[in-house]
Amino acid sequence: MAELRLIELGYKIITRNYFCRFGEIDLIADESGELVFIEVRSRHSSEALNPLFTIDQRKIKRIIKTAKFYLAGKRIDSPMRFDVVIVTLGANPDYEIIQNAFDAP
Image (tube, rainbow, N blue to C red):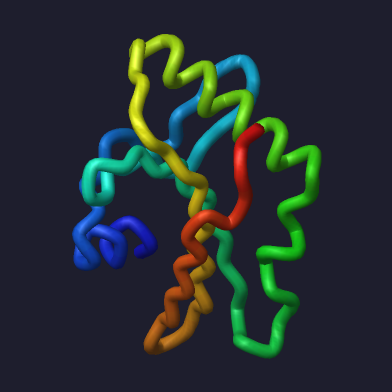
């Protein structure tokens, strides 16, 4: 669901569920020439805890390390960012896209 919403917004999905020895990235996309590493989280209602709070420093470090491994393997040197997509499930799902949710050192 998150992927379809991102496509509607102009993201070009490059890779889904990228895995390596360092971790996993849900989606990798191009958005206006910028490489975007995307973490997707869901919740069952808007009253539930915001899933953004479940992304701790350890998870962020794993995502960044995985992204760096991806970049090195593909020999890519381009602007990049880390987004989080929160999907609130229900009859009419709601999507919140947080661009630049965190930075890589």
